Length: 212
Figure 1 (cartoon, one colour):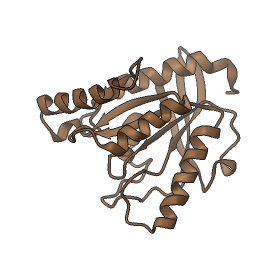
Figure 2: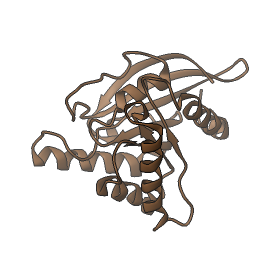
Figure 3: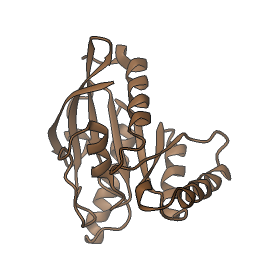
Figure 4: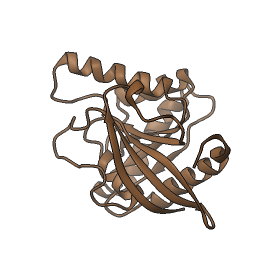
């Protein structure tokens, strides 16, 4: 799949304010400071599409980007890439956190054109309860998702493999069928081919459901 263009469309405070659900949609979410913006820029091959920041909690609304890509030979298809607020730590008031939680849950559960949710996990850390709880909740809601381990360039291959195994082993305690996962590095471009390949495959499967 070749991405022809990628442009920011709108930031919405709630799911009912989002653009019409007439295109396939792929959303990215993770704890604050997991490297979400950098990964989105890597996937789209744009250096400044999503704004990166050293401070957690900068993404505060549902951000839509319109992507135009060549999915199969000479056939283009437009789809939405969505940048969601991070869950977990952020230096904001408790009231604001509750608003974010409500916004995220309603988007995930009510957005009818959401094809896949990419859940980002920092590969440098041992399994965190908040990540495991979020993933298990997605399972209960029956939301299609893929685990994306980020920042593989910031640790050794052995340590990354150990943390990935520990996380997946934790999921294996409750899941009958394990979710798929990728290991990525936004700096080195690792995992981009696999992510793009999955999006392309899902777009082909759902092409008749949405207008181009």
